[in-house]
Image (cartoon, rainbow, N blue to C red; front, side):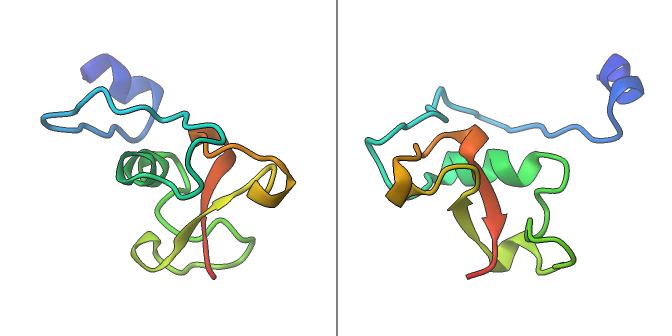
Length: 85
């Protein structure tokens, strides 16, 4: 932990973490609770990802950020971002 503190200014620790998948592909449209927690723990994940918006993560939804679900995007952690409705 002390080494990680010198690399990044934040560190997320999950107690009793499970091996929940973060890459669901096209198998599920909505983000899972584990995906939401992982997204919120990323830098900038504590609020809406829209430029200039500061709505807290507790009041946003998870959106397909790079490729929309309707355009064939997967429900994968690297394609999800917190955003306002």
